[in-house]
Length: 344
Image (cartoon, rainbow, N blue to C red; front, side, top):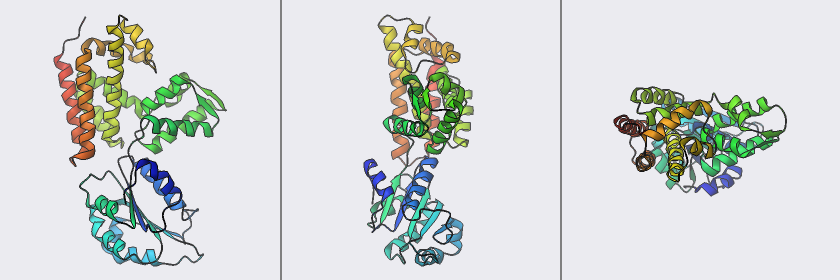
């Protein structure tokens, strides 16, 4: 059973009785864990209850395949339905889970967590096609969904971000749901009490987050600095930032360049164009942003943006390794930037 984005929240709050196992997967590991926890709590409010929860690893199931059926059929000493969780699942578990869904014992809910499974994944296909299974994809927050997460997290602490602060947070968070919430908690602690949140608050509290690494990568790409692109890209991937989030971060930079280039075409100076962007360009980046505008005319910016969008689509649909698709696109753009002489 495959869910549309608008159906996920309803399912997490109250899963359909006929669903015996759910696969929660995707490149956003934080969102995978958050949704898995929420789904498990719909059955067992206290996830620390040892009588009603069990955790299995792929290694345990490989060594003892019958363990899954045993845990699913077990009766809780304190009563109530049980939850069995499997983390770091992959296609190697497809045959075992297919057998389980074909004749599931007991009444426990099986919650399976996995990373980014491509369209050709046998595990993903199994859950999407099963009438008693569910597949929930978890991709990086962006746009309206990310803004909703930010506003919800801040409002819980009585905080009201102004337009510049909210725009900066939307531009720099979203690669991982858990990291996003962690950075917002850090911001709440920094502000200290309910009230307005300004861009100055955000830069002071969240300015050292992974978003700045994305800024470094975006500028290195637009500068044509291939060595820096490879270095920062490798760091982001090691830290768990998804290739799709990386591509979107760099695409936002080129989108802002395109907006500024359009304002310059209307007669504004580079500084006036940068000042009109929301959020405004951070002071320490103004020289580099101005240099990017000299290097990239509007038509070439549009071409780079299209290449980034195409790479994101390839990451989601081709089944090829997403990190390689991402790196190839960034190096291609950086190479083009290196060949272009800055305009005066």
